[in-house]
Length: 475
Image (cartoon, rainbow, N blue to C red):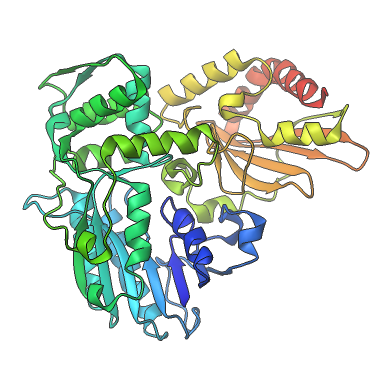
């Protein structure tokens, strides 16, 4: 089949894509920016990529007419603290307009479980998107899931942060809310299983794992699997705003995502039926099994996608980041250093593994302090880390940087700063034909404050960047 995959660069889309290719389908990926589709070169050669922003005015004949099916995996939950419901409505309406120009027979939409009368804004928006898609003139299959557990998923990574860092937790009352977590592996089975199945057309299905537990139970279950001693104390005084700040400072989540998650966590998300499980003969894994499978991927360094790599965790939209890929020369301050590498290939591998658990090769304590300062000032800090220990693609997050370009053949890595600074900053590494490693820091200050910031940091930059380059060039 010829399949359109929207949201191809998202957490779910990145995992659905290789499964569709393995099944022999032709896949058309719809993304805002082709440069930020974080997949290997081998996969890019197998797919067709179309750049489109579904919030923009509809362009006629953009998608191939011979589309057989489409996945709608677009999400605007944390694009801002307000108006994301309107954005999701506009996106869905524009998607329908695009589909009118194709022969699409089935659209598959991953939504949230919406079985309560009093829904959060996020879940209400998902329900509204369902209604819009049902008017699209194609056969719609809606799969409704609650908490998704898998390496790199926002829910899993937040619980992981909390349980690994805090042996004693003082928690708000929402930790007693009930949910029905499901492993990412099972979600993918359902998403690919309904493809081309007429018995799933024009219907909505709840999916969930076999365990109905509270968020407190999820944390206790995680601690059990990991062999951690965990004490949880509930207090009634934590407001939604305090809870959001608590998640923001303790975990790697952004404040926007934390606020929306807290709003949703007051709502029970429990599946009402298991029809799809029976239709597709899928027996979902338990919550603890899902955690164990997630750690198999983490320990083998095989995490395919992470919520941290999406624009959810970014200070900038994808369209904004596109304009930063060309490093400016004028009106900027520079720190350019170069050094001959003992072994250029080893130096390149070190550059490709920089950040995250591997650190920055020199003065890591100072990098951590800078991360804490950034977090306290409302930035992303260092907690995002990196998805893979040794692989990197354009669009990935890397601590408080965003990868603008990662071309191993050209031996060039370009990072753009997403920390809170009075200006804009780039950090570039490249290795020339003579085996010389060039490390260029560029800062475009914003007013006098920006220039004062640069010159106050210059002494630190000199010995930190020099030490980092020296370690990269050592065999």
